[in-house]
Image (cartoon, rainbow, N blue to C red):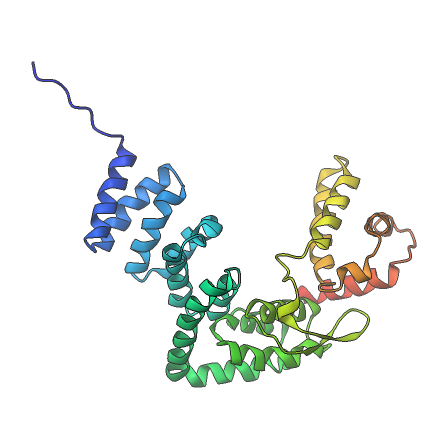
Length: 301
């Protein structure tokens, strides 16, 4: 009687077949098999060739959906970073492409920045009028409704660095622009490495900042520390109310970037005041809380 030859598990067979198809440039077959393998085990070893397959099919949004859960790992080698960069450039999101390479060490960063600059030159030739129109609208945010402002902001990734700067800088001191968007625009200037002084309207003063010298909202530490203190203070009492308060605080504390440490030098005192305020008690932060509430209301208008 002949011996039975055991087959590898189904997921591994899909992985092996998918990688062979990718090596042959058969992206459709590779993606189909690798997607089945990834459904069974969502690890980087499968995500990498699957992202390459999706890029080959020009399905860049789908590729990014796959890359983002493994983002840090994709930045470890030039080959893997190239896959992520190709996906960002494929979606014409130059702002996020520059945000990504900002995290790399200088020598690697320059290699990828050259690619971004070339891609920006191409899109300026192809979509110059569209980009110029977007710059005009973004630099006059106050003339649009909140929904229109959000729609415009969703397109900001299309802007090459010079055009982002042209559009964003005027809004940084415009009080008619919601602070959430002013903070976001400032953060985008940080992410693309803008190294010239800008005027920024903070909560209580206008100040001069150099965006590239700021940590960026993703790296800022005071906000998360305050939220952790608030969560600890709430404990397990009334979890639904606690979750709502923490979520509201997450938004409202972000309004204070990049001045959180200056405005809240005593985190414990702020957290206690925040809790007291939401119990109807007077606090030393009531003016700040009123401003935060007004800015929060703007987001839902």
